[in-house]
Every structure is written in structure tokens, then in C-alpha cells.
Image 1 (cartoon, rainbow, N blue to C red):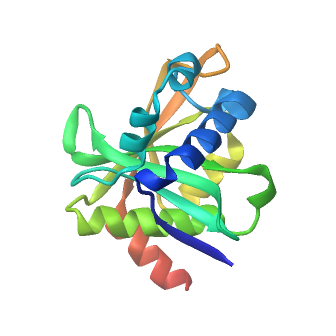
Image 2: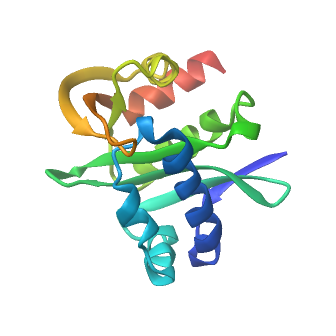
Amino acid sequence: MTTVRALTFHDAAALATVRLEALENHGRFFTADIDAERGRTRADWEAAATETTGAAMFGAFRDGKLVAIAGVKPLPDDPAIAYWHSDYVRDGARGGAVIGFLCRTREAWCRDHGYDEARFTIRKGNVVAEAYYTWRGAVVIGEEPRRFADGQTAAARWYRLPVLLAQKRQKTLG
């Protein structure tokens, strides 16, 4: 059984493990600086795992183990818009609707915290992520070159997802 919840500082070590795994094994999909992430202290990871008024990191758990993460924080250029980041499902947990559980939880959290829109980037050519989020109602609103954790610079597409639309789509699809 999969459970999804906001992480707490007690989850800091598990968050660090999963986040670094994502960057090391799938860095082509993340714009984070892997060296900076490796250099984080325990206190940094505890802060990243702790929910605040405008930000949270969510985790999906199976048998008590963290198998997926997804974050939300205010968009730096417009704090009224949610910026989604760090979506990652561990290899052994893929294909079991885990990302769907995380997305629904994050969308509900966004609505509860006054966000009606989310924005995020996906590396151009990540067809699985592009298809999934387009299915959820996200639309491409721009594209820019970004440096990814694998050391490459590539096109990243900006997406916009009205979280109220996502809720209506979910009710329609069951």
C-alpha cells in the first residue's frame, strides 16, 4: 500500500538519499546543482523536509520506505504562483500510480494554501513526463536553455497547470 504525506524533519535522511539518487542516476532530468546538493548539511535537509506556510515536500511511502518525492514552493518571480520541483519516483516504484498520488496531494495542498496555478519545467524530450503532465491539463508556456545535473545544457519547457482545472479533470476521470 502506498501512503502520501508532507515530509517532516524526521524524514531528512530519507529525503537526502532519494534526492541524491535522483540527481546521480537521472541527472538529465533535473536542473539542480548536484555538487551543491551533495554539500548540504543535515540541518539543510531537515529544513528542506519541513513544511512551511508556502512550501512543502511530499513523499510517497511503501512499507515505511520513501519511494517518491515531489516539492512545491513559491515561484521566485511571482510568489502567488506555486513552483513544482523535484518530482522523482524510485525505479522499483514506477508504474504503480505513485506520481498520481503525489500530484493529487500536492494539488490539494496548493488549493488549501491559496495557489490556483502551478508552474514547472520539464526537459524537452522527456516524453513520459511531458505526456503525463499534459494529460493532467498542463500547457507549455515557454522554453529556455537550462543546465541540468548531468552537466548538459538543454531546452527546458515551462508548463502552467491551473490546479483547479486539475481537480475538475480528476473528478471527471474518476
